[in-house]
Amino acid sequence: MKPQIYIVQDGEELTKEVEHLFEDIFSYNDVRISSKKKLSNFVGFIFHESNWLVSFPKHYFDYKNKPLIAEPSDIETLFKCLMKYNSYHPIEFGKEDVNNSSYPLKYFFNIYDYYKKYGLYYIEEKNKSFGYNGKIIWKETLQKSSQVISDGNIIYIPPIVQKNNMDYDFVTKCMAYAIDNTIEQFKKLLKLERTNFDISGVDWEKKDAIIRRLKKIERETFKDKHLRLIKNLICFFQDIPSGKGQYVFKTNNFKFLWEEMMSFYINNYLLFESESNNIYFSDDKLLIPHNFKKERFYPDARRKSKSRRLEPDLFNFINNEMYIYDAKYYSEVKKLDYKQVSYYFLLKDIKKTSSEREILIHNFLFLPTYLDNYQKDHFILDPFYNNDEENFVIKEYYVNAKNVLIKFLNV
Image (cartoon, rainbow, N blue to C red):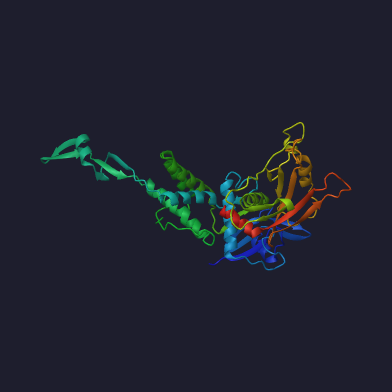
């Protein structure tokens, strides 16, 4: 059945239909109430039977145009961005409310990576033992089995037989199930090759039995690459939901991902006009990336007070010019950003020496928009309040959110 897809935007009002369809699967912080309106408070996906709810980042679309319409490429881009962030921060994923998923996609991708590199798991170990079931190994039977004469014939009892260890077949079927079942569940998002391997003969409803057998195989496995595969299979079957058709893959703190994406975007596409204090972004990736990064400063003389440190999202010092950039995932800017003001006054002299000329400081806030990139003034210091800081300006730079997500996938 083709899914019915509902598109919303983080921070925007939910329709009554969306409220009704997904109310049983919303977590407590997926919906925020403001002025008696219920607003989306997450970015990501909720899959509920044949209905999908996809919540895009703030300002990905023009919120005035209703209903919101997303192209398949938009949905795929958002999904891949969340997955890419997960791959960079596997410890955070599913914890501390950074990202959460009710489906073990992380382990699926680890399993799929093995499949791409090595193909399906196929290790055929041959066990030799005394017995009657299996292929007789005549050389070793003649050497080790007892001889019995019957009707003038020499009979070797018991013969040594060889049997195949079928663990490889079980692991292969587990791999194929994890890959093909996941691709089927998310076929609109995962454009990946299926294994199409026959997985019959295993009761996939009995997860505990599957996990026990995989753990037994794990104890008997020594090669690292195979061991990693089996560990991921165990985690996959431990985490896969018992029911079907109801999964979430989302974050309630997209601001962390916005910071990460802006770091990629700025370091790989930013161009300067230093004299005018203007910036713009290239369509093409820079040959040599910048080195903007999160920095920590401790202006309190008592040092190392974590609660009193300064931590600009992106900081750099190039040719006597200081760049203090901060990524802001806001719906709109209403108030003065006091933190950015403090960055300026507490950091403006850290690189200055008596022989140097005045340091030029570039102070920017980066925010999402559905429009083309543009900038405007956030704050200009009135000389009446400080006549020595006539160049103190904070600018807001609005970057097209869709383009930032696309570039993030290309870095």
